Image (cartoon, rainbow over all chains, first blue to last red; front, side):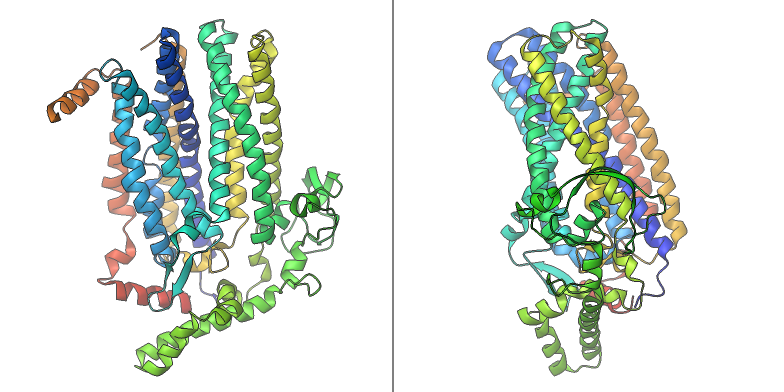
Amino acid sequence: MIDSIDMSLVDWSRGQFALTAMFHWIFVPLTLGLSFIVAFMHTIYVRTGDEEWKRITKFWMKLFGINFAIGVATGIILEFEFGTNWSNYSWFVGDIFGAPLAIEGIFAFFLESTFIAVMFFGWNKVSKRFHLTASWLTAFGASLSAVWILVANAWMQHPVGTVFNPETARNEMINFWDVIFSEVAVNKFLHTIGSSFLLASIFVIGVSAWFLLRKREVLFAKRSTVIASVFGAIAAIGTIVTGDTSARIVAREQPMKFAAMEALYEGQTHAPLVAIGAMRTDTVSYPNPREEFIFKIEIPNALSYMVFLTPSGFIPGISDLVYGSEEHNFMSYGERIERGAVAIQTLKDLKMAKERGDQVSYDKLVEKFSDPIWIDQYYQHFGYGYYKGRDLKELIPNVKMNFYSFHVMVILGGHFLIFTMLVLWLSLKNRWGNHKWLLWVALITMPMPWIASQAGWVLAELGRQPWVVYELMPNITAVTRLKPVAVQITFWIFLVTFSLLFIAEVRIMIAQIKKGPGGE
Amino acid sequence: MHKRIFIFYYDGFKKMTWGRKLWGIILLKLFIMFAILRLFFFPDLLKRDFDSDEERASHVLDQMINP
C-alpha cells in the first residue's frame, strides 16, 4: 500500500529520535535514583546532627546537581521532533499525550524546579525540616515527571482507554484511569524507577570505591557505600521482579517482541530459555527453519515456565505469528493485513463521503468506528493494512538486536544483584574496602547499569517495530514526509552537541569528585 | 514575604561557586535549543502549515489513507 515512502527517511528519523532519547536517558536514571539517595542521606543528617553526614549529603547533592544541570531539558528536543519529524503520529495521539505531558509540565516540573533551588541554596537559610522537605519533594518531583512520560510510552506499547475519532483523525481518551493504571504503564514505571535506583546506587558505590582505593575520605566512602548498597540490593530485587512481570506482559501483549528477544522461530511447549548464546552473523528476521545460533546454553522448560508457570505452556515463535496457527488461535499476518486494509478503506470512503457531501453514508461510516464488533474484526488490525503488497519481513523486528539487548540486560541484572548483595554484606560487617580487587570490580561495574538500562529501552522500542502505536500506526505512516537530508543534518548537529554536553558532564563530574566532599 | 524569597534566591545565585559554570551550560543549551534548533530546524509543521484543526485533521487523514 505504501510504495512511495523513502525508507531512508524513516530510518534517519528513527535514528535521530533514538539518538536523542538515548542521550536523554544517560542523565534521567541517575537523577531519579540519586535524588532519593541524597534525600535519605539528608534525613540521617537532620536526625543525627552529625556533621559528617552533612558533608556526605552535600557532596552527593553536588553530583546530583551537575547531572541535573547537564541533562535538564534534553527531553524537550524529543517534543520538537514529534512536531517536525513525526507530525502524523503527533496528531494521531495528540489527546492521549496532551494530558499526561501537560500534567508533567505543570505539576512535576514546577515541583522539581522550585524545590531544587531550596535544596541547593537552603543550607543555614531555611529551617532544617523545611530544607529536608525540599530534598524529598525534589526527589518525588523527579519521579512524578517520569510517571507521565512512562504512561505515554506505555500507551504507545499498549493503547487502552481510548477511541479513534475518524472525523478528527485523533485518538480520544475515554478513561483516564485505564490509561495511567494499565498493567503495562504500572509495571513500566516500577521497572524503570527500580532500575534507576539501582543505577544510582552502583554509581555511589563506584565513586566511593575510588576514594577507598586512594585511601581518601574513608569514613565518607564507607558510609556512602552502606546507604547505596541498601538501596542497591532492594532495587536489584525489585528490578528483577518487575522485569519478570514485564516479560509475562510482553509475552501476552506483544508476542512478536517476545519471540524476537528469545530468537524463537518455531513455537513450542516446554520452550527452553537461552541463558547465553551467539547468533549467526548472517541471521535474518524472516522466518526460516534453520538453526540461528552458533552456540547456545539453554535452561530446559524455563521460557514456558516463566510465562505460564507450567512447562507445558505454548510459546509462539515468529513463524506461528506470521503464518498463523489455528491450533493455538493466532491469526496470520496475511489475514490481519486484509482486515487492516478494510479498515483503511473505510476511512478512505468516509473522507470521500464527506467531500461529496453524502451525509447519510458519512454518518454510517463514522458509526463503524464506535461499533465494538467492527472494531474487533477490523480496526484493531488497522496498522497491518499498510503492509498490503509489501514484504512480510517488514512486520518482524530485528531479531538479533532484540536477542542481544534482552540478554545483555538480564545477564547484567544478575551481576548487579550479586554485586550489591555482596557489597551490602561486607559493608555491614565493616569489611568493605579490605579487598582491593573488589573495589576495582566496583569501579568497573559503575558504567554497566547504563548499558543495561539502554539495552532495556532498545528492547522495548525495537521489539515493537514497526509499530509506533502498537498495531495501529506503523513508523511509515507516522513519519513526516521531509527530505531525508534535512533529517540527516539535524542528526549530525545533535550528535556533535550531545557529545560536547556529555564530555562537559564527565569532565565537571570528575573534577568535583577529585575535589572530594571537602572541596568547593 | 516576597522580599525574603527574592533575597533567598539572590543570595543563592550570588554565592554560587561551581554552580556558575552549570548555569552557563544550562543557558547556552537553552539558547541552542530554542533560539536555533526550534526556530530554524524544528517548526511544528501542522501548526505552521495549517490554520485550523479541521485542516490539520484533513491533512493527517489524507496521509493515513493515501500514504
